[in-house]
Amino acid sequence: MKKPPLIFVHGAFCGGWCFDGFRKPFEAAGYATSALDLPGHAAGDPPAKVKARSLGDYAGAVCEAVDAAASPPVLVGHSMGGLVAQLAASRRKVAGMILLAPSPAWGQPVTSPVELAAGLILPATRGPYWLESVEPDWGSVRDYTLNRLPEETARALYARMKPESGRALFEILSWWLDPTLASFVPPLAMLQPSLVVSGGADQVHSTTTVTVTAQRLAAQLRVVAPLSHWMMDEPEAPALADLCLEWLGRL
Image 1: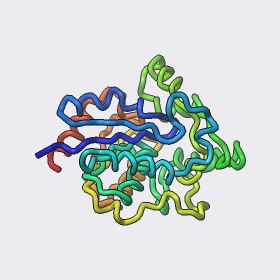
Image 2: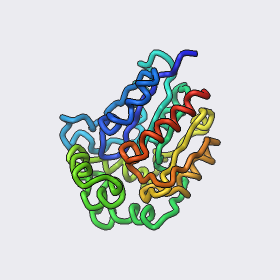
Image 3: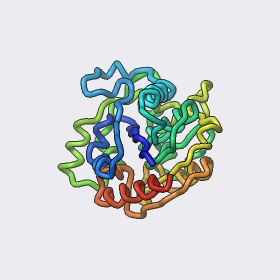
Image 4: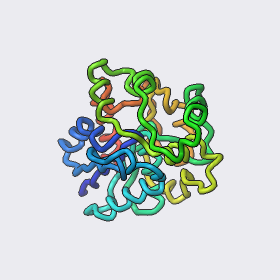
């Protein structure tokens, strides 16, 4: 059976580059892969280009990539990209989804102190941040996202990060205040075979929160105890790729 192409969808403040190393085992296994830059996230894009971008804009870009694929692809989304992948899968036919530490959808409460604080810090410190582009904060990134990587590696990754759309962050973090329901995932996304992976040490999207996502999608859930949020480059990344490849082999 022909293997489906894989489209990798990055999270907030990143670009397709965050999958550079993680894609290699899939390509070695014979999968065609691509990792798009969501609108405003390409290397040369100025900060203003991401301003006012919505999750719907991001999902639209993924839909265009799906349309251009040779056959229905599997969407591999990380963090915010995991939520964007679900939105795209509700609009297009895909072969499946692999969601790595996906952001929660509309209507899904978060469950950990760090997650709860994330929804309060931006409005408390930035005011109407949904009108702005938001710069990544080294302290938060180091403590919660790149916390299991060596300092030199973390610094190099942080240097590649870009501002994120405050609107997109608002649609995720303050969904109950969003009249557009931008992060609402229609039931069609639940029809896709899906694998959801949680890092047992992830503080950005806790295992309890990710478990609710897996239950909502009727997806297979795998919790990998040592992993934190930036699981694509952590020491267990090869084992994570093997886990995903095993699941792909059963499609």
